[in-house]
Image (cartoon, rainbow, N blue to C red; front, side, top):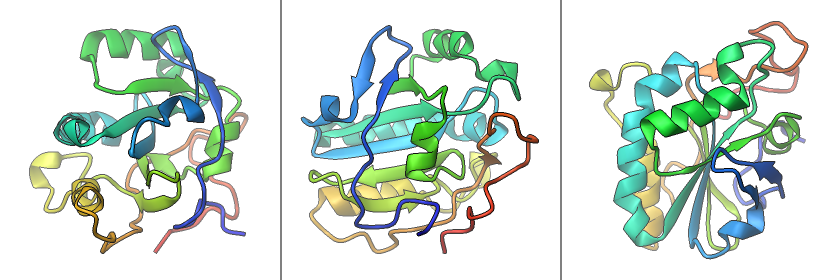
Length: 193
């Protein structure tokens, strides 16, 4: 079995606390015809470099019923900036248009097979995976990006078309796994394409 969720597979369940003080389950987003779950964090330069493009994409597709949900699974023992308290501060400061969930146990990251931050997963109304991978091709410096794969996938989905490029390799820092070196990845974690 592949480490990362494969195209056509169902979204794994979760119950996670959010920076808004609530706890969310996958079913809490049933009203959204398209759900974008993405693994992110507070400190990663690839996340910081592309957050405003992600914001624009979320705002662009919100009127079409697309919901965005960020999940931070990084160990705060690796980077203290990735703690829940710092997640709350970051959301208060940035006011991103998504729910920001905390996966302290890292069980959700393992269930989805999150490789990097950011790593995007797009699910259709039946919560089947239709796109996984990067948001853009240069997340660290979006002034140099040439393609927004997430925008392209969401455009196709919301127009009722199949996704022409359903999988790309996420570009960013690896997930910071508890008790491991900052650059460690599970042995079965590999490129998607």
